[in-house]
Amino acid sequence: MNENISLINGEFKQTISVFDRGLAYGDGLFETMVWHKSGSKKNNFLVEFWDRHINRLKTGCKKIRLSMPSNNLLDKYRKKILNKSYRSGLTQGILKIIITRGEGSRGYKFNMDMKPTIIFLSFPLNNDLRDKYSNGVDVRFCKTEISNNKNTFGIKHLNRLDSVLARSEWDSNYFDGVFVDSKGNLLEGTMTNIFFTKNSTLFTPNLVNSGIHGVMREVIIEKAKFFFQDFKECEINKSKLANFDGMFLTNSVIKILPVKKCGKFKFKISEDLLKLVENFYQKDSNMKEILELS
Image (cartoon, rainbow, N blue to C red; front, side, top):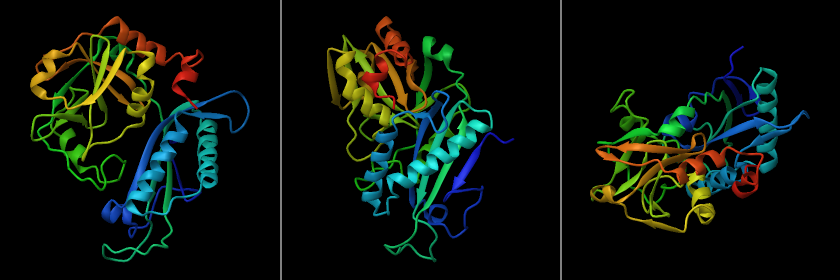
């Protein structure tokens, strides 16, 4: 059985209309999260940061004036696809939600009463990063520039050509690439947000007109007080990277991944950072409460 499962508007199928605006114009949003089977009861699944992802979907729908499906409908579809995933042999995986504006006629104009296309996708979780969590990864600077748009930055819309083009710049030597603006200020990775450490202070780039307000970025910022003495959201220029001790990447799948080298700049993987990474995976401890893995 194919472990990749798709649920479209409540039906298990793998095709959408060629007239869907998500295909024609990238007119839609998406969220990606990790799920686990929890306990022996039916429908008992843990989807990490579900509420945060749904809240960002709501924010995105408001920004692009897309009709947001009800929480009850999304919960129904979530249970349906995760139950099928579990019956196919998975006990954990990646859950992706895509919401497009739906089918429409030719042209950019849309009707406000259009019925959205709601897509749920389930994939196996191939977590082969254990050695990278301990030893760190290499990242590079992207030549591709990231789009600057105050109307759509921060949300996970379907227009990801910046990341697609940037990711084509390298093969397998780097885990991710970092976008830099015209002033040399770092923004984010192609699929991650970025953080730096110095003397027990946590730093991350401020995102004003470009970049994604990642769910894990949000969690780390809110919970920084548990792990760091201070936190600063500020401009981080490429020329100043030698001033930092450590660097790490975040997203909802990898969680926290140390960086050992960014371009020519090398970073230490401190014991404090390793403890942060390790503690994050102790989901049965009080970290579950601190990090709201529910």
